[in-house]
Length: 381
Ligand SMILES: Cc1ncc(COP(=O)(O)O)c(C=O)c1O
Image (cartoon, rainbow, N blue to C red):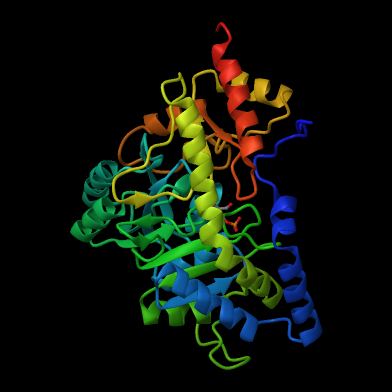
């Protein structure tokens, strides 16, 4: 009998079931240990994650948002500084910049990658360098949907204008450019282990990667009150620790990440083969890059109708993100847009739809999604 149950965009229960025995054993080990903050579980995961990304250092923290805040602070970014980023991202990217007292300056995206456009970056740098909006200090590209931003081009512009490059890798664990993983290109890379991410904890978690020992030292100080030794703060820090329970669970999942990412890539290839030539605009792979499909995002001017049709056919879909940050009530009309209007960002928000994709999605479920999308495409419009 064919399965007609609801297909979730991401399925945390299925992911847990896939690694259940190992996860339970790891959780019990931590519970039985009597050691619940820091210690060898956290250190072991940090080492394994650094090795995975290809950086000498990875420093765990409480979330992807905190990873951004810690990375910005560790790189010396604070009040009076300007950080260029995109409006097509999770709000955390922009919120983190404001949390350290800096000003986010928003630029448009490359409409095919959905990531920061290096030419818009160059124009923004020229405008900001000529003005008095603050010290232009850093650029923060986001590898959205698992698609690597064009880092070689972004790094070239950053070098020209003396900018720090921080990568927001929250949606791209394992993605590569020219064989090198994201998080190993900029001064620091920030990761979220929110449960739905490609590498997800069973709660909140985050990490910052870096090749710079001075940045790693700052990160370790900042995440725990600026302590070198207990109770003595050498700098003003915060409390943002990855706890040993999450670290142990992440250490179980990390060795499976490559397989999970390959499964996501296979699902993406199946969707792409089925929808090529249709009215949907599909994600592309760019030469030399390896995306990890945190989301598979299609574009269509009538995406709301498609979303409804899929729901009627027991298929969940999501919109990441429906309103660009500069149009959201908390931010509208107050953030600088140094490279002009964000027309590509705004156009993308109107057309995007994320289809179900995750490491445990079966071929049968994938084919049900394809059949439903094709049935909708075949309707008279
Ligand atoms: C691009 C991006 N940056 C930052 C974050 C923040 O991560 P967290 O939810 O772990 O704070 C997220 C996740 O929501 C994200 O998708």
